[in-house]
Length: 247
Image 1 (tube, rainbow, N blue to C red):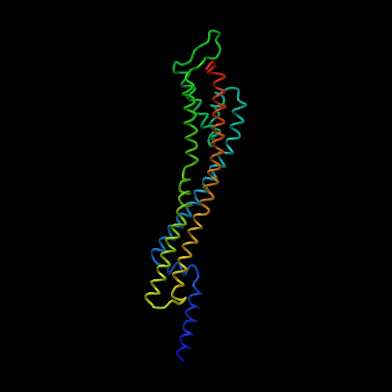
Image 2: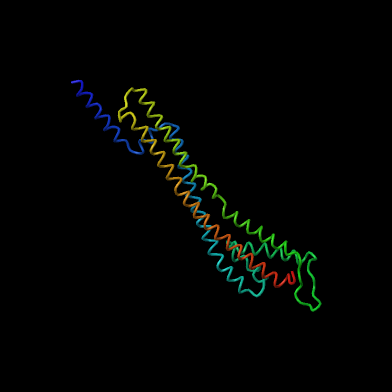
């Protein structure tokens, strides 16, 4: 009778253990593992919110840049472009133009303009100031695009290790149950192993999208930086031809 009873008890225990689903495993997990899971869920939700916001930001910038660049090349003067800047509020090219144009006006009003005897357009000096202003404008726009991406990089690199911490803690809990009961049956170790695997899964679920999103946005930032540098070069060449002749 005794062996039969022992076998029946083990079978019942295995059946109970295998009936544990994910929610039950989380509910029965230790406080440390539950806290780890909450941190991972917070990291994942925040990462997705950042990715949605950055995708919207990049789309708005790219959509606004095209009409502004078209306006810039078709305008009769820089003043005409400057007067219509309010129509391109999301364009980073427009922001670079604004700072470059304002610096150009400061140079013209600072006594660095030389009036030619034939009454033609004044010749300016101080082109280095314009170059610095354009470089500063580009840096500001790139920093705006890079905002909050550091969080995605952090989640992508740290998320798996946070999940691994929960995994280690869950396995330690399983060993403690084995030590306290003196049995190594599936019913004893299943809860701890279940919460350990859940922590690993949520850690990867938080890290993988964050890493992919970070890499995609970094690639788009590089494209934006190239476009900003090209526009700044075109603006500088235009200024040289019209206002900095002979320099």
